[in-house]
Image 1 (tube, one colour):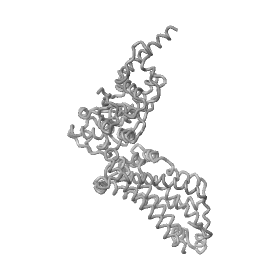
Image 2: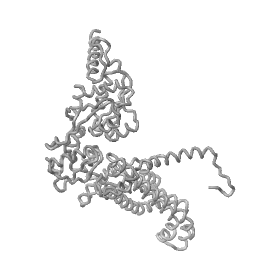
Image 3: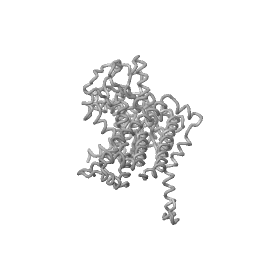
Length: 270
Length: 263
């Protein structure tokens, strides 16, 4: 992007290194595309087990995204606008799943919601069994995806500042009204991109699901788990399904950038 | 002094004897320097995940018996290892958990000579120590409400489960079909599942974290473990010597202690 003066401010050699970085991501994807068995592509991705896995992935990721929004918006608000002891600690903990290996998340969830877990025993008494259920998949996905929403939204809240909110409050608006009429519309693009990122992360979730939820067709075997299993016997199917996952993820990320660009000016209009 | 010399002589003799067990170990004069003393360098062994504890032990024994040698081990699912070797991973020896994956390497002309079968393994039911669902036979696994975890049909342990299911005339209704036997065991040790179908060796390896229940139908699906030298090996002599130590009496004993059967 050129600035008004036409000055780019980037040394030429940076482009060379950036190209290597870009290739590191793009080249493996191209290599995978080259491996696709095109004549068999459609039959491979429309087999019963593939469709079951894709359907389950889309449904659970949608549910996780909703859960992320419901839980993540208050969290981001508290972290961005609140002022209380332990705030930084809370932020570190909320962001932890970003850097945690997913399998660790799965083990942690197992010892929380599993049959022998912290809450699992009480839940079982109440007649709720989470292990080996689709609920377990949604929980695992929400665990790993929540930080993406919180980070995006907290950033948006901080950069938006609280001037408009202060003005609304002086005009007599109550906190809930300010939140609903001023704050949320202001950060809607940030919320949207956070939600999209959460969806994408949920879609790719593998380790926590495998550890915590198990793998059964139509119940807990999401697309990444199906790919992992197919790879054992049918490399063509695994590659074809991987491409589907890349396509879906690419579409989702592309959509979010598109949405951000088109909705950004709207947000500034009061 | 004297005892030290005797001990050294015994060490040389036993090393020579062990070297001779290797199928392709070069013939050496009995009194001359043993073949074992010529062995040096590193041998990289790709072995099925279920061989982890036994091969770690066997490698340690091998290194102790052949100073100057080093055994590097890499454990993963057999089919993963086959993929890695066909993609050029530097393996000298491949030990598979089933003959099917070994055949894949043979078909790809990546084996040096033919494979030797060195162990067998059968399925067993693993239950948590308290056995919450009171499982005592294979048929019990099909009782309503029993949370059974098994391997998916695509992986060797799952194929064995299919065979046993057919032989017993029992249809399982699993809550999860895992892609590796260790994942099945994990669901049982964590207490999430009431029962899981794993190998006898997995039950033994888990110690008192699970209880094993043998069942007669298991002998309908005996898994055979083959081992072979990879054709691209840079140190075929050492590779052959290591294979020799696995198939030796001492090797059989280590494998037997872990629950493996003789081929």
